[in-house]
Length: 117
Image 1 (cartoon, rainbow, N blue to C red):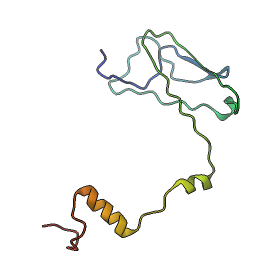
Image 2: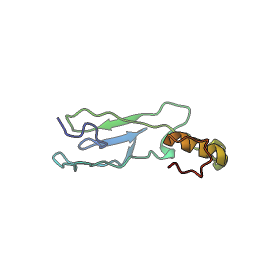
Image 3: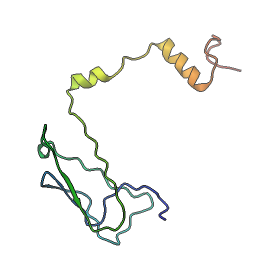
């Protein structure tokens, strides 16, 4: 068994297509070992490759005997105003201080200047 149970990397001799268009991924020859903490960079599918409102096809071919899984994250492009609207308003100072004291296990009500002695 491998010492690292889950690595993020592409299989040997990987060829990936999205809707028939090739997508450049890390192309590794068999026998080229990764380091102990080796990871391949994630790949972003260009927007002009994906069709909205219809079926899209992801095809992966490789020459690797090991088992692999694919993580595909689908996101929607948002405007700056939409992103700003998702950010919560900042907490007031007393609310933030009370949260911080609770998370650190402090009392939160003593008024002793913030130091316990």
